[in-house]
Image (tube, rainbow, N blue to C red; front, side, top):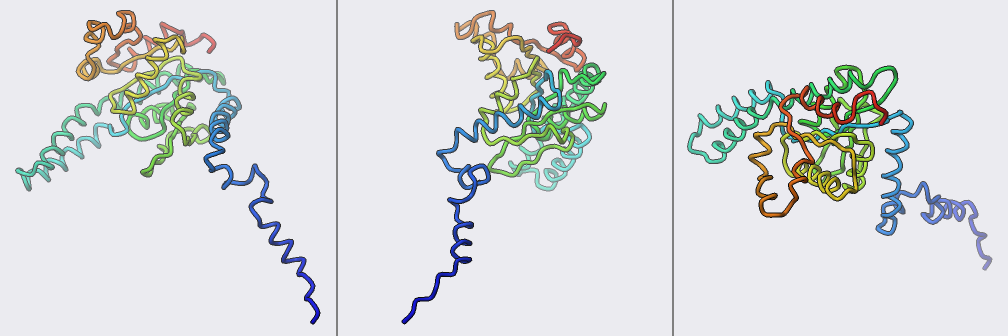
Length: 285
């Protein structure tokens, strides 16, 4: 009985389709392995850096704040809806809480307009004659982040969004400059990019994410790992209610000079005046 000759085409096809034959730089299965984490970290650091160089980004101002804060008109609509629901079932604790939260959100909603105005002011002042200095950079999400990117878009200026992949679905806000919208897998690398070109950080009212970024920046300034970054807290009443800074000094947990690592501002103009006084809008980054 004679043997059938091997089908060379089938054998070759099996080789060509084998994962081992796939070029390493085109092998997504390889790149997602735990052993390749260091490569992913490097790529995630390098890609935004190269693109920002190509776009001529010299320096940035980071704007942080809650993703949950909306502009006043929408906040009023949400409150009206919550109060209508509560009126239908006034004894419902969930509806009571929802209405109370909506009232607080309405009280905080002017910060959306302040963030938008701040970005308009900075971008129209600094992005002139082809220069890309003091470019607004946000976490790329909704709320205060959207407001800041929107303010830059209002005056036809560039702005950056550093979005993060999360377990729940998240999309970048539509006001980011498309060529400067980045998606990160790792918080650590994203945080590095926030500060690599930063001349200032402006923190609006926010939750865990805002406080995380704020305290990391303050720690880096306190320890001298980062220098020359002006930190502005928007809305002194909010921040003084949230954090007992004098207690930290009184208990010896921070030095008196550490409490001078940040300034307060109430308006977009005041925040910009503080930053400009420290750095000067015409100085090179």
